[in-house]
Image (cartoon, rainbow, N blue to C red; front, top):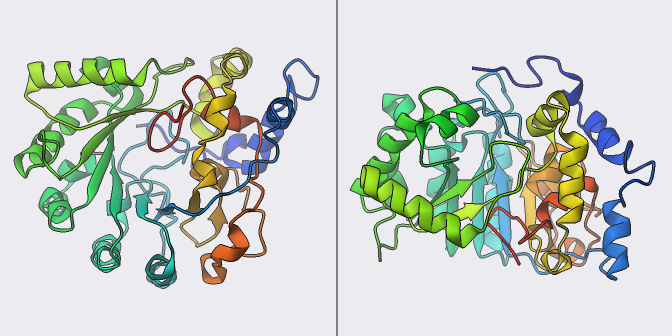
Length: 350
């Protein structure tokens, strides 16, 4: 298993260094237009926040895996975990906000020691769509997690899980040896309690990220291929597939630079820019909360330490009136969310 950038004391463990790379080079020299210049051409700058619909909370960077593409730089060696006090502040916002979706992420969110308590409390708030982003392997990693499918079912949690491919080779290459088999076992456990079964209200969606320096294919076509392969070969059901573009930050940025694919990948993103995708980027209706309670426009800005452009910068200061209508903070990584059909935590947007 590889180590996180932080554990390796990599230059890219510094968020400011990542922003410098994204701001300089081919963008500073004018070979490619900055994201601000690009959206200005279509009169879409600045991007403005709309009414909040999704509250995404990162409850910690600790994870039982260290995936090659991880934009969070999560792993077993990451110790950043949301405290119960910060969770209590989040619960106050959940109870009083107009958001209809609560999205818990990590790392592996289930590794936070207060995770089940938080789900219990948050589920009482009447959120319409309660998402937990599970890496699947956490379910089989330890006996104490084996009952997670039943726990999710009891709280009507919408499970969204990474699945790079329907084959062992491609999955293990991106996420580590043994991940494919463990993921299949977890998917079967979820199916056994009703998740992902056609017409079931227990939602199970999968997330696809490309394994290399290329953009994802058509989401609908890929979903058909995934469903056929997983059912024909393993008898596994799921509802939807979300195809996400890898953004050039953190460990994927490290991969791009090490493989000398960075400039080519940025050219590909810029050439695939779709102005229609700008209208529906997730940052316009989402607030991302970090493990220590700070507010960001999206999970990617959180990892680059680019806080919201608002007086209210922490969950303890949360104020929808101050946050609605704010200018979204952007940099060149935003091309990843506006390339082709667009990309968000809920899949394509255009």
